[in-house]
Length: 410
Image (cartoon, rainbow, N blue to C red; front, top):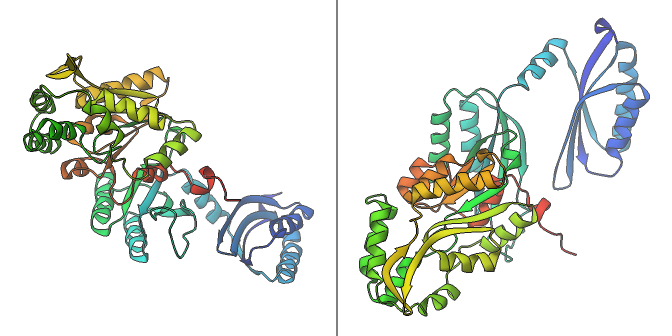
């Protein structure tokens, strides 16, 4: 087609979704040798909206629009035509090269106010929304199968004026609005993550195992005080670890099995692990806790790796000492790097999840670091956080839709 003899036309069709609609419309374009430049479709409830941008000759455009109008009327659909100039099309193509980002909202409920505030922040930053998708299944009026959750994903495009300020603005909205918001650059690594590393205590389980051991040893208050100070980052983890382990001296190791069996598992762990394994992720526990309990979770949920601390035992009792190297914050980051090397993946393909100050080193080097129900210092430092839903909320930060990973009911 010669440039002075072509027309670019956008058509938008909406109405009740029905089989054969797209085939009929594109068939008309095919009969007239029209060239489709772009096409997109979305469905809400039973209503479908289809957009097609096509190029044709000036001689054929009138007949094409006439036939499309008749077909849309025949199928009880509304159709709108819009001519696009060469300059408008060129500007649009140029815009496709701008940076792309993914903003994910997750919460028990996402309200119109939540969406309004996030989209206002997007607009204020000069970004354009290209696409909006719901990641969770359609919410029934009565949710009784599992704790309710909703997730919406925005694909946005543009040049950020200040990435740090924008991310902080989203975190502030999340903190005040009882909704979690993730902001990630959309690229090859986001779509090819392969390894997820978890802290154990207060992440995979809702307790600190050393506190449970301390209760059995009769030193619960002393150990909990040290634990809280360490998790807030007030004292060095290594120092606090040595102090707490020393207080366990003389405890019979037989209590460890009972504690393991009765560990309180965090909401969403079972579903999360089932789906992560189904889609091929490698999973690891990197814990400042203890191997005995990490290996119990490994057997129960199918984790691939466990790295934690080993308590020294003599004559069936804890000695108040440990063996091997302490798994502190620096060691967690080192283990994350080593696992990426072993799995032959780039560190940008890794995810780290944790709640405490000793998790920050691995959260900061992972491709995606998520603070989970974290202490204030950790939430303030981490770029992503989840505080409103269970651990399976990270599935949506990974871009997984319920409809992709969960079997349909028969």
